[in-house]
Image 1 (cartoon, rainbow, N blue to C red):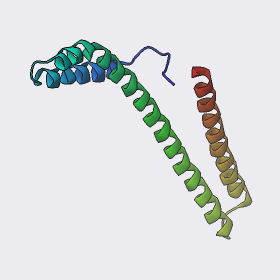
Image 2 (cartoon, rainbow, N blue to C red; image 1 turned 45 degrees about the vertical axis):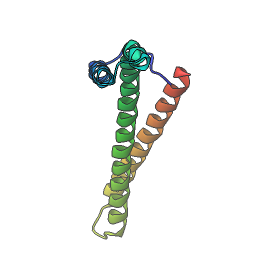
Image 3 (cartoon, rainbow, N blue to C red; image 1 turned 90 degrees about the vertical axis):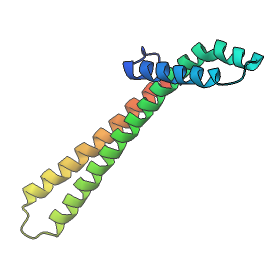
Image 4 (spheres, rainbow, N blue to C red; image 1 turned 180 degrees about the vertical axis):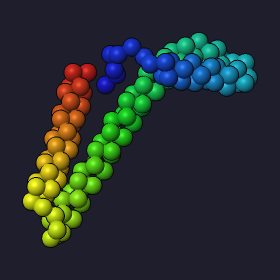
Amino acid sequence: MISKRPPRRSSAAAGLSGGTGFAGLVSLLPTSSTKSALLILSPAITTLISLFWQIAIDELGAWLAYWKLQREVRGAEALCRRLETNPNASAELKEQAQATLRSVMQTEVLLRKQRADLILKEQ
């Protein structure tokens, strides 16, 4: 599920620093054929680190968006419950709170659908 988008600067920087760190650690090994092979592979490892960094950042961003949305849903649900038990709350205010809750839930559904479509498109 590798993204077809061009790499971001952060993922390129992570790959560069990770690859440089890997090459530095390999250079500490005693001279052997393993050391030579690992030094030859370090550019490929740099590229892999960049790709996996981008995937990790994308997944973290999606998780954070879902978490924030869930927090909004819980807040809207709590507000609706409070208004339902409040005898001073007007019917109009209760309807607005219900509309807000529906809107937040629709946003969650759309976000999940967009994420699923993106995953299927990357396959």
